[in-house]
Amino acid sequence: MNTMHWKTLDMKIFRPFRTMRNNFKPDRLRLLPVCLSLLLLLAAGCTQKQNEKPRVATSKPTIVSLAPSLTEMIFAIGAGDQLIGRTTACDWPTAAAKVPVAGSFGRPSLEVLAAMHPDLVIDVDLADEEMGKKISALGIQRESISCKSPDEIPAALRRLGKLTGHTREADSLALSISEGLALFKNSANAQKNKKSVYLEIWDDPFWTGGKGSYTSALIAYAGGRNIGDVVEKDYFEISQEWVIEQSPQVIACMYMAKESSAAAKVMNRPGWSSIAAIRNRQVYDRLDNSLFLRPGPRVLEGIKQLHEMIYPEESAVR
Image 1 (cartoon, rainbow, N blue to C red):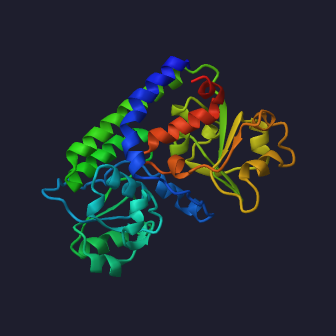
Image 2 (spheres, rainbow, N blue to C red; image 1 turned 90 degrees about the vertical axis):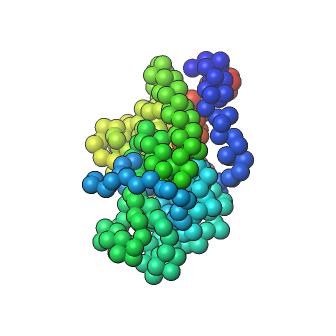
Image 3 (cartoon, one colour; image 1 turned 60 degrees about the horizontal axis):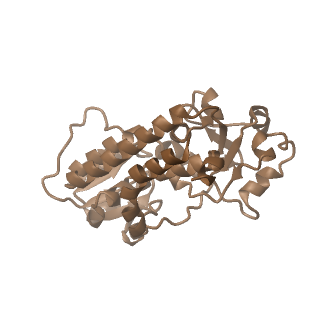
């Protein structure tokens, strides 16, 4: 990708988002082992539940968000002041911290919901679907909107716009993201000799994303090739031997090491010295993993960061 092409991408994709980034500064997310059990919820697909008819908001309802990705979208379309409840995992933008907690991710408290009595509860999926019936029994409207692919984020934003009464803002943001994704896709298609990438989501045990996962789609948009695409699963456990055999050219760690940096730990693993990424020192950590594991309005920023990790030589000449 040449310098002029990247300047065009920067002008067309990121200028509309700089205002939003100035208003909201993401905190560093600490990835804990328990997130593995929630990973499929974080990356579940952008669809409305079957047999549920869309409802368009006639006013601006009060909202409880039961997923971090939805909370980000709600703030991004200008509906943050309608949010009266969130989960403990909803940590971005920083303004979300001021919103009262209604439970943990996928596990809301019925007692708290009853006390809040919002007009609308929005989730990506619930740990117990019986909870959905109980929420409805409280007389609260419930909607499920979730994302498995970056391509589905614009539709999710538009849906949220209708539900919250912010159609114009949501449509504008959705269009900007759609156009940005198209530009990244064109750039990725033009990328020759795509580098292989290993996204280490956790290291005890070792987990990565497979074909069809949200992280795999991000890597593809960034012009890379996910080594996990050989497996028809979203997220799965792997062995060190398998990673060594694949010899990825880029390694990105999606977690924080307790003592030293995760990248330093990877660089010094016994038997890993033959891996291309180790030899060329293309191992990265200290990342805001919410950009890569959480479908939301910052998707283009996540793709951009991935591209810069995969092809630092191109970023250096811009």
